[in-house]
Image (cartoon, rainbow, N blue to C red):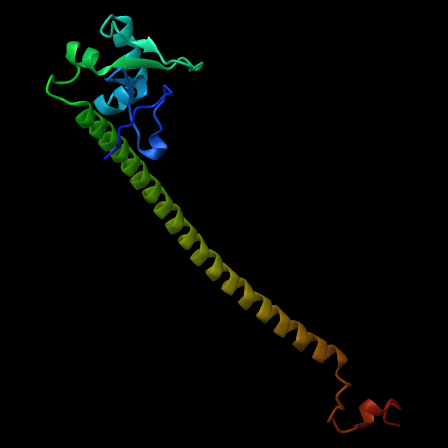
Length: 173
């Protein structure tokens, strides 16, 4: 579970497990944190604010990126969270949704990687079979070349025919 600390800075540090900002004994949340907890995008939270649901929202002090902080009480007043939900419970909700999303992303990544591994294994088997087939063809060609070279370089074989008057060349006379 995330820890809650009062910070001088306006931004939480999710890498260190801190969510929300404590200012003047009130918890404030970023649009992203609210979106994560409520399973909507930060743009939806922005639109809610533009519609007047978060009248006490403030720009994050010292932040030049446009981060807006929305008080916990505005979320309750707008009916976005139950009145009984404490800041600790809301932070836990953010963390649960984020970890759930990360787990889902990891599952997708593992599934994709598994598919790629299977494709690579199938390709490996295909190319091994192809390499074996080509090696056999090369072996056969090499054997044929050796036989051809042996035949070409072999000394002439004596003939075993007996000499006859027709083969002596004197016409038999």
